[in-house]
Length: 88
Image 1 (cartoon, rainbow, N blue to C red):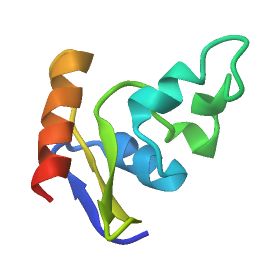
Image 2 (image 1 turned 180 degrees about the vertical axis):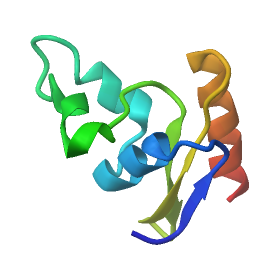
Image 3 (image 1 turned 90 degrees about the vertical axis):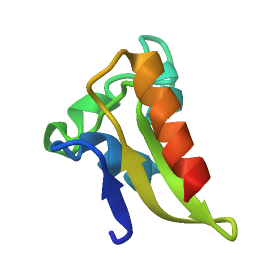
């Protein structure tokens, strides 16, 4: 994958956002017990993150990369990631 941008030393949030072309917070909602992606965080050798803060970057309707933020609360991480994606 190309086009990675990460504001954290760990790359699980942008990896997940780009690998699945979905925000990690949205994937997390669908990874709860009884939901369609339950257990997905155990795939890809533990590199799938289902916490807020990972967002795919789109250009002309195509996903071209991802941004991942961690270090605050989930809400804070998501807010910063959304700002980064909007600036892209």
